[in-house]
Length: 99
Image (tube, rainbow, N blue to C red; front, side, top):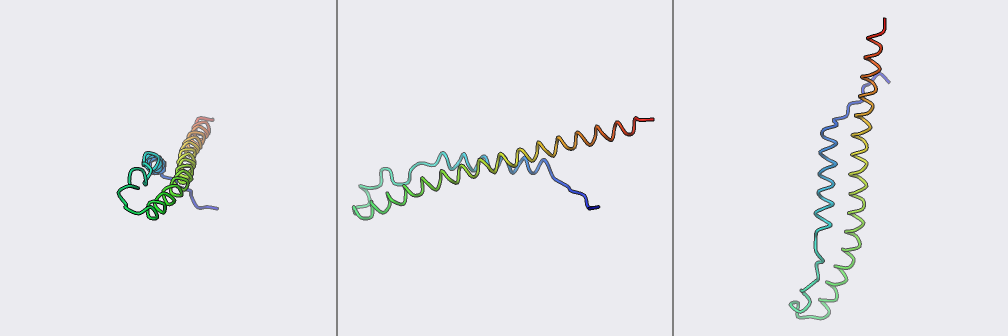
């Protein structure tokens, strides 16, 4: 247990922001099949595309939800590490100030 735990709070915060941005990008993506059915020339192909798009929408929302949870976890980690650092610094300051 003599090893030290090191966490790059800045990097964890950056990762949280990147995860949030990816989630935003996915949430802004439009439905894939809208407007293409008539251009495909085949009702069967249009049906397959529509089924795929519907499935993609469901899975995209699950992915967005997962990304949101992961970003929240990363933010919580940064806050927890920061809080722990502050508590340790305060404890060390009191120890050094004690006679």
